[in-house]
Length: 339
Image (cartoon, rainbow, N blue to C red):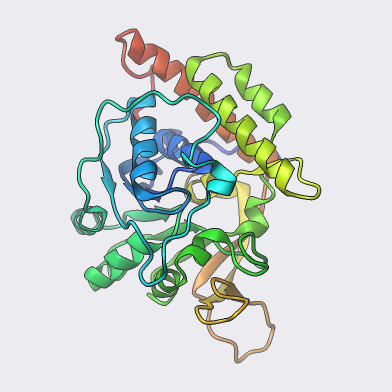
């Protein structure tokens, strides 16, 4: 794959996808918010319990909204999975969900506590909206159950989750493992699906050297992000046998829409295991070549241009630093950029 960076979606006429970003910040969710802010028509941010409890993921989303001076609503959603007890990832992201930096307190909290209603209303009001979940799929499942007509109204769901191997169990990735019943609803809904699973997200790694590269951008915002990256990378290195840094999972669910030339994959049939003693939360990806397999229901991403994707992140961080400085000086957004 050529290592060139494609023209950003924000600079291609009519190419900015309209999205609702459903997230559980989370270090990598922060970068998903950042990339979405620059390269999409971001209709709103919804939050779900996952990397941390709901009150904290919502707080973190509000912190990022303020840090990027975004004029978008934040709506909190599900505090627990559909049927399972809530399970968090403090062992990866710290108890705050964003350990590693002193976060400024947000100026205001969430605009509502009904993320599902926001998703339904937004997708009905603007057909062709993408849902981009980067945490457990609880809010998305509830929205599809509440409003079955959404399946024919949305452009699709581009999610981070799943893969051919696991990180929370040998076969289950955290987001799917945290609420497999919700994932089963989404994967069985018939909506167009794009899946950025661990096979592809482990190809985009934030090393300590890359954290230093971010720090060298030398703005208050990028200094904060560099601290978050150092914590995130250091935690991965400490918890794995041979890791060089942290997998930057979540922004790939956004880049699949904004920078599709950086990624490639294959259409597969994917089902969710909900009852296996050792495999609950597994995404069962049918790779057989027999003709009587189930038809594909998901575009499974398999490869990413690491250098190109990292450049998208760096460019977005540079933009964010300039934007924050311009807003602080009363000048608004940097010239030519509409977040």
